[in-house]
Amino acid sequence: MAGWGLRVMVLIPRLRLSAGSSCSQQQTVARPAAALRGAEACITVNAMYVDSHAHLEGPEYDADRAAVLERARDAGVRYLLLIGGARGPETLGAAVAAADANPVAGGGQWIYASEGIHPHEASRADASHYDILRRLARHPRFLAIGEIGLDYHYDHSPRGVQREVFIRQLELARELRLPVIIHCREAWADLRAIIAEHWQSSGLGGILHCFSGTRDDAFALMDCGFLVSFAGNITFKKADALRSVASQIPLDRLLTESDSPYLAPVPHRGKRNEPAFVRETARALAELRGVDEAELGRQAVENFKGFFRLPEGRSLSPSR
Image 1 (cartoon, rainbow, N blue to C red):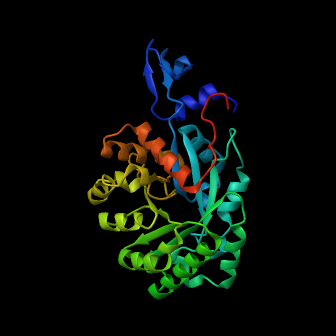
Image 2 (spheres, rainbow, N blue to C red):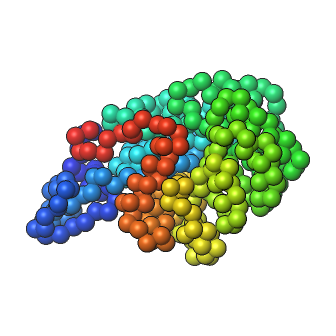
Image 3 (cartoon, rainbow, N blue to C red):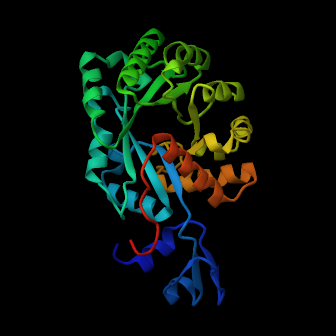
């Protein structure tokens, strides 16, 4: 990547500046005097994060999608899971197309795809959409069916239809031997019942995206093979209950996500979200858990990689 010395110094997290300091086991890069006033930048090139849920196919990113991905790479995002179909079943394939448009970079795969019929759009699903999902699943970087589930907050689709479409997609995922990405809002009792009856025996598990349930919900579903993913709302002032749950999730079952373009974390709240901001979520979770941010980020990366049995992600060394 051209201009490494200029770009990475701005965008890689945990930048530490000191005049004349040494950087043990780190890469030292001199910044321009105008930017750094003669100091050195000690950059922890091993900082890494996972964004396990992002929607980048929409018009919000048409003007700068490539730059958004570049910022994610420079921020240390090791794996990025793009979610397709959430804007309607006619958009199924968007995540796979985005993964194809941004192939292997820096010596390793880092962008993957998942597709599914969102509960908001359940009333629009028909047989052809399940056939599309079956075809998309053949893509080598297609990891899961989702996001799928139940949303009783907005009720954009009738609840009975939501349950029917959810179960149909669980059956499809079982057939394809793929895990699922779950969306659930104010429907935890029904979700847990459906998972117990229609999914737990598959042994395939999945990810609880943008988790918003209780401790009991989290632990019951972890017993069914799920990882628990937290988004930028963990940083919001009124999210004490969510932070309490997050503080109790075993570190080896925890994931981070941006849910871009939604739920930008503090200090970016109110702006368009992007995968690079996932480091703020990791930082908040690390502070909550009393661990180092780099340790939390690396653990989430390993959880994602291990769950999906992925090869090594891209190198973060300056030689890429």
